[in-house]
Length: 93
Image 1: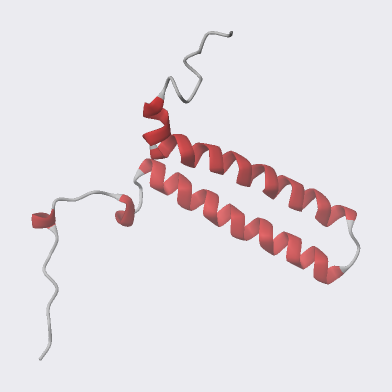
Image 2: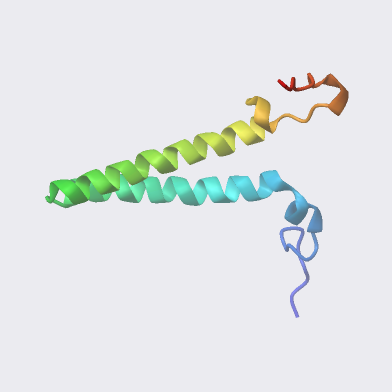
């Protein structure tokens, strides 16, 4: 029987609960797919398929950026702010 290592998710539950661990894995998968799509654009000759593949790569690139922004908390939507620091919404009657 093999000893469990620190890389075993069963032995390291913290990484399973850490969203950054998951965002990094998903970003790597999306980046691979982006590369594959862009390679295939050069392999196919049908313009509509080329546009589909390039558009798909661009959309995924935007998602990778969103994941980066989440990891860096560089967008206001990803920052955690105390409820007291948020301005109250005005209601118009």
